Image 1: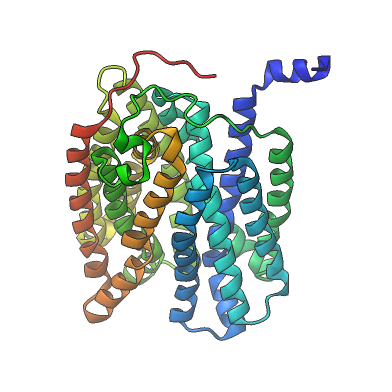
Image 2: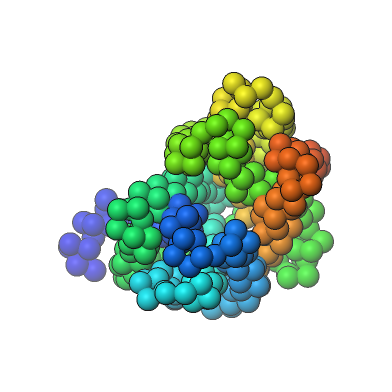
Length: 415
């Protein structure tokens, strides 16, 4: 090894470099996903598309995401994940770049479906790689930092789609992710690390943790997965309709409503994710069930503010939204870490793929449409309020899941 290489590695370890590149890809991933809703009125105007057609674009992304996930998980447990991550990043970057040549609705639909396939590969392999770089006790901290990209990327995507799309046309914002995505994929090819599967696992490898059939009998995995799925049903549905709710019931303009939701999401997302991860990390020192318990309290504390948001007086709508989102984001790192820790390296990619399939199949793929159907027959307050039932179900599942949390090693260090 050269002196230069040794010097650079003294400052940035391979694990930290890999984490940084995966974090950058995750940020671009969520920016790209939320550019579309930010620019939606501009796209709709050009293609003369109905609301149902515009909603079908998101459904296309999640459907292809769901059905690509099992195959991606199978590949990730049998082949090197590094080229698969690169391939996924290149696929959605090229699909995004191809937006420049989209001139009809169905081409855009196909483009969005390809983005879903690319996202599925990255969404499965990145947490699996990070789990093999850092031991069980540290995964909550690492994944909390990794998933900060969700609120930041969502807010930047909304703003880029609306602002840049208005200035330069709706296709322009997509280039914010396409070229950087290809560049970071190239950097990952050069500097990303492929850790050995299970190299940082310390929990005893039992059949329900190390076999594909076993994960369907693994209560820690199943409660984490379905607790997250029911949570995602409510969260995904509400996030799709909250700007419209603020416009319709609080009298905000469309632009002001979207800006308000973006600002609340990025502030709550960063603060909630970091604080939730910090609380869980400290609690883990004395209670190995902390990841599930923090997730339970996160959802439980969201419920009263969700009720206030949907059915309270107009003056409390925005404060209730702020507090509901803050508490909801507390579980981001802990719940994902609980799911990752529930299985061992040999089947981790498959387990994550099953998890992603379930949270979208039973979560946010159809909940926006269900809320809309309830709203058509009553009003949007009742449509949003109906999703809170799923938060109650999530609380019950997560509290039950705490019983099955695996014991962790007493000490572990970041590498």
